[in-house]
Length: 160
Picture (tube, rainbow, N blue to C red):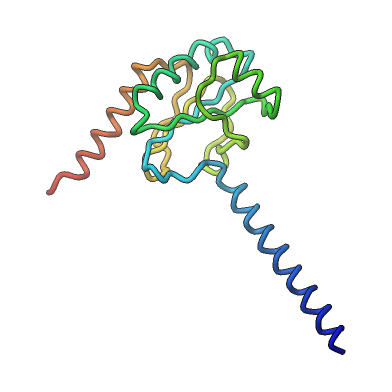
């Protein structure tokens, strides 16, 4: 009888752990973006190895990130879903200096997957999509977007 209760306890415990682990995995899959502990603006860029404008845009994104790192985080999404060694090879070949997300965040953000490249999605500090920029961006155009986001925050902070 004691053995039977012990087996039942072990079975229920294993089931509980399995359900908990599955729920945690499901929650992680729902939001592929890192938690924004540093309260930064997120710029998420879709790129592909075969995309000529992407190849020209990536250095601009690298410069933009370096110049604005205290306020900005840049993430990439490999349009073709490359992983592992293939992804690392492509990042090295294109000179990608920002992290590439393993999962496409489009559905989590309520967006359709881009049909053309490059595309850059901009999130404010609260994780709300503010811009979906189609086509090649430059450091200057990205800094203009950042300036408009900062100005909007300043306007909200003013007392009425």
